[in-house]
Length: 115
Image (tube, rainbow, N blue to C red):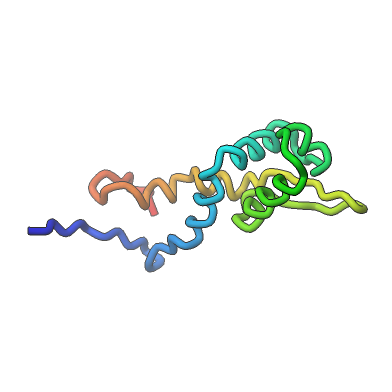
């Protein structure tokens, strides 16, 4: 006999897990986590300086930066011929938010202010 689990559906409708999928895939790599850590510590960093910090050739670094950009975890600003990268704190904080945590709590264990 298969036990059916209660399905949590927030007041706004169904949960869109696809928006989290790319973000968590991007986080599932040690080099990308290191890049995000360095951006957290240094703020806006030129890609030319970031190659030295993470000790990675620019071609490989660009690959990882593209994944982080597509996931919305970092931002890019172009100044002249150089690109400067910065952590997107709003997106990262969203992944650590109480809202997301509420989705993965049992119904009877959620605080009353949970989504």
